[in-house]
Structures are given as C-alpha cells and as structure tokens.
Length: 288
Image 1 (cartoon, helix red, strand yellow):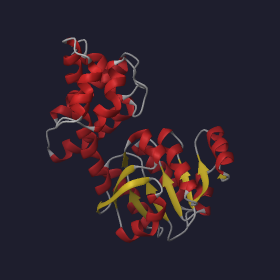
Image 2 (cartoon, helix red, strand yellow; image 1 turned 90 degrees about the vertical axis):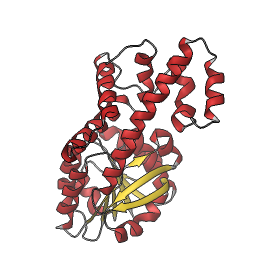
Image 3 (tube, one colour; image 1 turned 45 degrees about the vertical axis):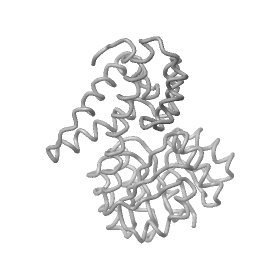
Image 4 (cartoon, one colour; image 1 turned 180 degrees about the vertical axis):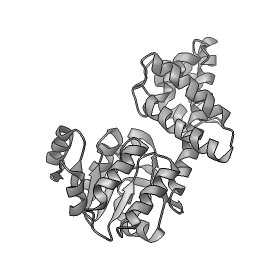
C-alpha cells in the first residue's frame, strides 16, 4: 500500500515521518515547495509540485490542511487523477458539511473519502499517539488502517461521512472548557501566592487532573506559550463549532466566551501562541 501526504504543517510533518517509518509513505506535497523537498530528501520519497500527480501515484491520499475551502479545493484538484478504488483520508478539522460534500464528490469517481480528524496536538503527531475519529465507509477504513495505525494510538469509526468531524467538534468544545478551567484556576492560585509547581503536582494526581494541566500547567505559569496547538487554529475550529451549533439550534455559551477571549488575544498579536495563552488574560482578570 502506497501513501502520499498533502500538507506538511506542524501536524503533517510528524504524521508523514511516522507513515514513512512504517514503510508506507511514497510521496509528499506542500504548498511551500521547499518544505516538501527537504522532507522528501530526509525520508527518501518523492516531492511533487502538483497534488494531482501525487494522487495518481498512490493508493492512500492523506490530507492535513487548514480550512474548509482549502479541503474542497484540494479534493477537486485530485478527483480527476486519483485512481478509482483509492482512499482519501482527510485529517483536517473542518465542518461536517464540508466532509459530506467532499465524500459525495469523490464517490462519483469511485474514490472513498474518510473524514478523520485527530486529537493529540503536535506532540501526538510526532510520537504517533494521536486519537482519530473517522466518518465514512467502514470497509475503506479497514483497508487503510495499517497506514493510520502508524500515526495513531486510537482509531474509532464514528459513523457515516461527517461523523468524524462532528466528533472533532465535540472534542474542540471540550478543549475550550478545559482551557478555561485550567487557566482560570491556576491564575487564581498564583494570585494567592501559592507555589504553582506544588499546586500542579498535587492537583494532577486527583479528580481535577487532566492532560492540559500536565502538559501546559508549568509552562503557562512561567509565562511560556510555545505552540502545541496554535490559538488561531483553535479559534478557527470553534467558529466551525458555532456554525454547526447554530444549524441545530444548540447553545454553546462556554465556546462563545472562549472565542471572544481568543479574538482579544489575536488582536493583541498572540495568534501563533499556544491556546494556554488564555492565561495572559486570566492572570490579569481581563474579560473579553
């Protein structure tokens, strides 16, 4: 089984390396050609300057790009050249509506489409420990599972096309709440003069312990916000969640509040920092 990776951002790089390590990667494409050329040399694969040519050369087309329109544009680019029977696995975070549109377009060409967003951040992409939530044909998933196993510690089939993205929306809403709770609580503790390394250590072992506290607690209280998951990207994802919620008449006030906080931080120039940069506002008592 031959796989190609389209999109070599912070997540795509780690995923491509793990697919190569498992022996499946044959080709890469990135909008910035220099990045794909460097990685292709490192992994001894082909760097294509045209995603359609990559699609024609492989059996599994992995996509990891940013926005809804980008995904639809890419699917349209590769639809004519990808081989019937091949599988497109989109690991981007987009709306469930975009996923169903992409699936329908490729189905006309005899190509399977899986919406397969992931969770686990840059660390998970590097280590091959991502969680993947998949919508689409279960038989197509089983055909490409060996490739996906190279990137993921957990893969769950969620249902028909769009189900993976809907599940990722649940994840992103939950991540917003965890970010709000952890940054607010730690800012509260720091304002009371507590030793934050001790606070984090003891709370991490109890009922309030969580991944975000373990991996971002100390760095945020020390004023470091190096990106694991960029704030601007989570903002983009939460805007998708808002649109999906509006379509079904659901209220997601915590998400709305987080979006407002993020927009304030983005206006102050912190778009490329980690989402834990919310701590900047919490520690000063600033409201969105």
